[in-house]
Length: 253
Image (cartoon, rainbow, N blue to C red; front, side, top):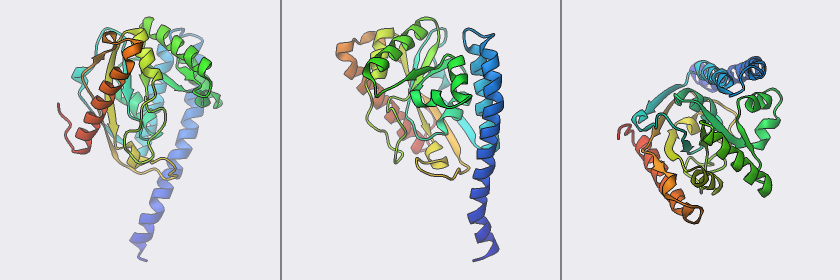
């Protein structure tokens, strides 16, 4: 094996160790900043900006470049629900950088149990959802609807978990119950490239470019709980179409 071949095998490991060390350090430091900030920012907006700095810091060290398309479809001046596919853990810092608006995550309850990180999430007003407990999950959706009515947008992964192979999984219905109850537009979006950076189950982090695109908003006010499956189908079709365009290298439209 040549020296270059050996370096080619070692460098991804070194790259991963450097990034993971940086993520731990920056999470602890900015997590503490977020916790302190939360005592002075009752809306969570300032804490969310700390989280955006966290996301940018991770992408900077990871050498990941994010390309954003379709921002003309963003709805200005009112709350919306962003819905996206979920390819990788790297989606989190990428979305912090890509979305030019304040938003709140609807995230699985396990994340809120992580020391410092979870406390910072609560300080930002992010919403915990425990899908193993139906009553708790419905209470979370009620809180999310109230958050939206108070003027904040929410970001949801309707698949509920990361993809195993890069393809779009079946959607959970909870986010669409939230959408029809809140009566706000749903902005479909897709991310492409993060699966190649860190596939589910992989321990290595690879350098890749990431593309995110937004599609035209779909008004959930046109649907009811009885017709929420129609909304779910419309959003899924829109996300799949955006994802297919990104895969094909088509970033316009």
